Length: 249
Image (cartoon, rainbow, N blue to C red):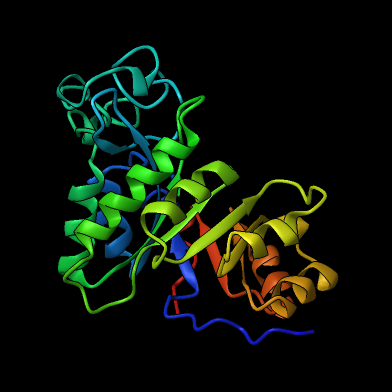
């Protein structure tokens, strides 16, 4: 039986990691640049420090996007906060710090922006990280009358953790492949959305997601031809690095 589509208060266009590749990813500088290009929704990656702070970092390790070394989740926030998270990108952003989820949330709330928080746990910490992100997001958005953050993850245990501490917040399942049971898993997790690698979407997959009442989002969409194809299929959300190329509607 076909389920009605869930309400969807979010913009179609979502800036990947703040402003894609035009600024150092997952920093407040990237969010500000994305906003300058007209974007009103942003995606970011959240993980836990060793002392339980929720901060933004995509990789497990620090080398690619900061001046630090080793596992990001193995360090305290006091140590992480001293790292340069911008100099790797360009001299313009040298000295840009890592961001906490709290700092990003306050920026988004002050500007009435929307946020997609991807739960990106360090190895072995999926459920713990999901639970922490759920608690923190609940606290930060408690007084907001706007749309809540969308919590997403590739890891089902992370979404289980988020559901345990923030059952009221919307969840989405991220998919790099269409593994057996993906739709039933999304249903079991009571997801409002499925977020697929863009090439996975075709009419059959779109009909399956929409038929289950879930919205369809695609990552990371950087080519005009891909945008046209996905819009023709009925995509609900497009996550892009190219905030300089696509004007958000």
